[in-house]
Amino acid sequence: MADSIISRGQGIAPAETQSSIFLQIGIVQTALLRVLDSPLSRCTELDYRSYVEKGTQSIVGRLLNASQDTLFPLDRLSLGRGLLLDYTGDHDNKTVKSALDALRRSIDLQPENQYSGLWYFTYPNWSYLDGMYSYASFYSLYTTFFNPTVTNKTTDDIIYQLDLLWAHCFDNSTGLLFHGYDASKTAVWANPATGASPVVWDRALGWYFMALVDWLEINGFECLSTQWEHVHARFVAIANGIVKAADPVSGAWWQALNFPEREGNYIESSGSAMFVYGLYKGIRLGYLRSSDQRYKNTADKAYAYLTNTFVVKNQNGTLDWNGTVSVCSLNSSATYEYYVTQPLLFNSVHGSASFVLASLEHEIQVF
Image 1 (cartoon, rainbow, N blue to C red):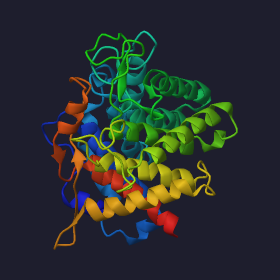
Image 2 (cartoon, rainbow, N blue to C red):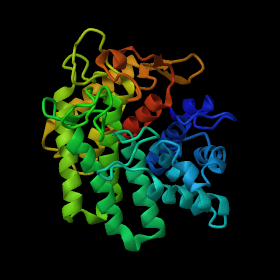
Image 3 (tube, rainbow, N blue to C red):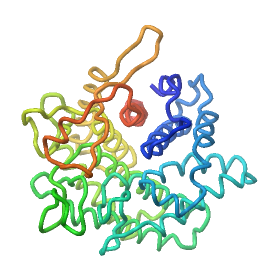
């Protein structure tokens, strides 16, 4: 699947870009870098490192102004891994370092709501689960590389943002989190008490779930700290909710998780792949008890369904990916009907790259 993503030229910015391109490049680069870091890298026929660098070069010039960067979603920070790859290969690359520094400064300039919660995009006072995937890993990695003396502050900042979303978006009925919240509680969809949106969207929760497990891995040296244990407890709680929410027939997950089997709802491929990745990774790193077979059994069943249902095999040997919803934004009615009527995309990297990540973890489980 990773080779097929490259064969389609995905993860490279076109001449005319939209704000969605940042996360598309970022998730592709993350998947390719994970392959390079795995034993499977010996089997690759394509130059993944050069392809990641090509993706970085296609977008780096648009990241050099920290103030301008705040006009893009927090997803922009997902480009950090690719930039760091370029920087570690060439410390004299001033453009790459400038982009890294601008992205870091943009965090300090990011607009905030009255609780100091980061806006996800330009919509005033709205915070999304989605943004934590890019924010938590980039902020941690940048601090580790360039300013390790402020690690404690960085950790405090990240946990504060994660906890704000938890406090406003936690759904007692599922043990999962709603898509986001409006701190002003004025949006048409905002819960009058919490500001939360009404739908537990699988992909938004998938980004948040991956943010937790990736942050735990990046900060594994702090595993005895109360901060690390706090995030770990959040991760386990979400994992338990995800296991409970799995569809008993397919083993995968609904687009709108708090409306299982409701008319119009369907099994969505990108969020499902993210959940499989998080569960397998949590087992591998010891964050989920291997003695509790629920986690592995759930991931195994879902992975088999994803492979048999959404992977399309072509005669030329490439693989396609199906069943990924395009975009669901809170800049909408945010109703159930909205979430289940957004178009599905063929070969969306939000799904295919997440499947690469899930597949890598699956292979490790097998061996």
